[in-house]
Image 1 (cartoon, helix red, strand yellow):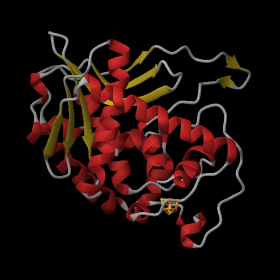
Image 2 (image 1 turned 90 degrees about the horizontal axis):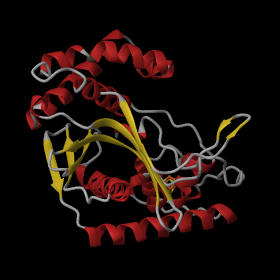
Image 3 (image 1 turned 180 degrees about the vertical axis):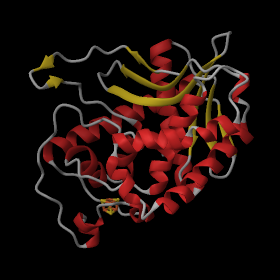
Image 4 (image 1 turned 120 degrees about the vertical axis):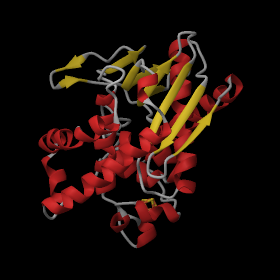
Length: 296
Ligand code: SF4
């Protein structure tokens, strides 16, 4: 399934250094700001590098294999075919991002890690039979502008559309973080996509489905229009707060147990660190998600 795009927002005019995209809110960066404004700054404004974990890279690999699986005809989407794709897909990913290979001490470590990815693929097949559906799109780039002018942007893992027009948004979760920590964040992300798709298509998605491949569980949720209207207001409030902090540089730390997963403790005042000097609001695109964000 080829990567697709639904887009109602015109891109800004190209500049001499390339195409400038309007600042936008993505689900990952919105979650960052909600969790900790300083974390948002480090990621979206300072754009500090973060070393990915093996689990994050494995998530990217499994997402990629599941996307390719739906490129096969029905009847051929079988566990063994999917698992056979893991090694060649990893070979491609590691060519695109050679630094990811540094996560592994030797070939045995890669083999063990690929075996972990195969378990996630098996867990996927325990949750549904991919031969029974044809998604409208996988890894779909979506973008829309709310009436308030806030631009929302992100990637949907999978979009299923029934012949009757009912929409299902599917997201695969491969991370090892405890469910109770990840679930609220995952639901925030799914409602974000529900708002984007509702505004793009005029149809409230019938179902938001999270497939947790590390423990073979699925969670389905049916949003309604009043809820999405309220959620839209929440997103607008978050973006307003981000812009206000962006003008002043006042991004405060908000410590929580999620700090255990933060790569920037050494620069965080809550851990005795000092952030770098505020570089100012970045142009053009502080809302972009990385490929690792999309595969958590
Ligand atoms: S360590 Fe915690 S408080 Fe500090 S930037 Fe990271 S998430 Fe925020």
